[in-house]
Amino acid sequence: MNKDRVKKLVRELIIELGEDPTREGLRGTPDRIADMYEEIFAGYDSDSELSVQFSEDSDAVVVKDIKFYSMCEHHMLPFFGKVSIAYLPSGRVFGVSKLVRLVEKYAKRLQIQERMTKDIADELHAQGVKGVMVLSEAEHLCMKMRGVKNDATMTSAAYRGFYERKENREDVVAIIRNAKSSLL
Image 1 (cartoon, helix red, strand yellow):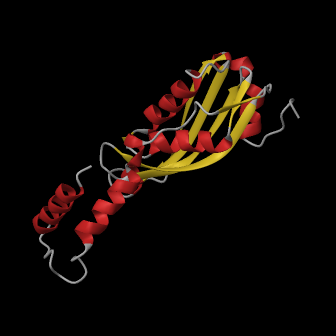
Image 2 (cartoon, rainbow, N blue to C red):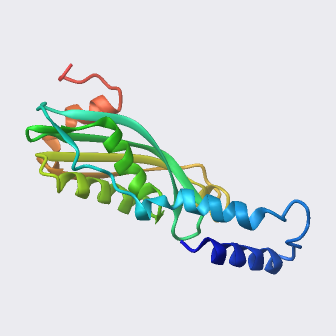
């Protein structure tokens, strides 16, 4: 990202909105927005580090409620929520922080929730695990503060490998949803 260009564009936007970019409250705004964009769009340059694995096996690994913040590519307004990931290892497991980084890699981009969910599942499945399930639930400010102005939340899901069959995912979905599971 070219931060100087972003600063210039933000300054021009402030002028187009009818404001004075030299006004006290707006004087540092182009710098702050350029810094913010560098942080919230860091997913374009990040590495989820999924190649770092540990020799171990498990019947199922579930990481629930990974918080994320993203930006809707249609209106450039935030959407945010939680992602839960379940996978069946194939002799190796990932550190929990690697799964959090995987979510951040895709969330910190101009994005739609459905693609983010699919991309997380695809990258994890490409590591050779037997099955992957990714569930994401989010609130979208592009819908809350404009347009239909509704507080609905959206859930999206992606299933790969073993979890593509509905009967293979019911117990894990119950764990994620805090319902009683026959696994426990």
